[in-house]
Length: 163
Image (cartoon, rainbow, N blue to C red; front, side, top):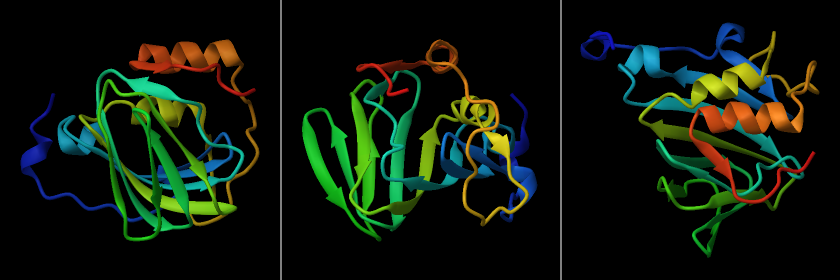
């Protein structure tokens, strides 16, 4: 790890740091490189019907701060409805996922420590407009490729992912 965590850091949303991943827009605001591996922060725009399947993080805790839309977070057998202004903590080792109650939603995703954002970036396609609508995947991974990549980053699916 580097010592960049002692330096001031700021990033503006840009095409260079935005990817369309499986129907969602991910704008990487901070990642392992800028935070010495301590934290990743991603502005995510998600769409109903394209939510991730139930899964468990084995390496990082996850948190979401809802900016737009109505979400339901399912974590360890508890369902929590969330609207703009709500903060959700999803600890590592606990199965979780979310569903959208509105067509679209936007949230700030935080991962600590950082690292999983590399898998998200690899699964995504570049976007020219950092505020534009996500594009259909140009080269969607197969189910086995996605399961392998996420597994390599410590994420285990607890239900088969929807194809």
